[in-house]
Image 1 (cartoon, helix red, strand yellow):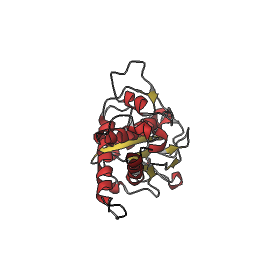
Image 2 (tube, rainbow, N blue to C red):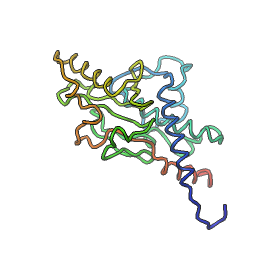
Image 3 (tube, helix red, strand yellow):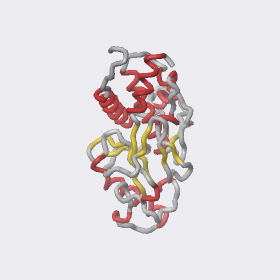
Image 4 (cartoon, one colour):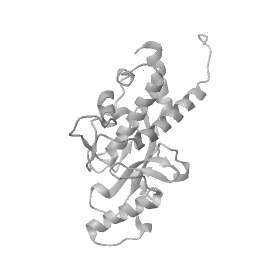
Length: 235
């Protein structure tokens, strides 16, 4: 590389983006040293060692509790850690670059989680993409019926892990779009005693527009810039 010469790094950023997506799927599919607890989020300042501990079932118990939304935040952070480690630059690079759960995953408006915001290295898709435009590894949120007033099951945050297959923490296996709608309908029945048609479950495609966004992914372009600066200057 010659000083002053312009270089097209688009192919490198596309590789980074692909690796991040692959590792998000791997993180979602991996066993977790955590249990399900509605409404519980990780600390935004959580660093590499604490994040890795969630994905290591040798971690001593008691294990922490996280909601489905909290686990997606951790899965995104773990995807970044895995991608950096694959670059063979040693451990702790995640921490040394000032990365944490708070800036590599979406921001949330707790406790309702009805508003999601982009952060330094994460882009919330707003307006939301069509479901057919989503990629493996993307965060995807399925909404219950607007009549649901029960709290924890007003929606489910998932990672897309296959064609029409989405993994949400606390569930024993990935589900399809219809599968998630059925589960949310069942949760509505549990609190109301009423049966509801799946057409009344908003899911992803029919989620209310006032929620602005319900999918997103790590911003490989912003993260790639940060990696380049750190590996070039050490800061």
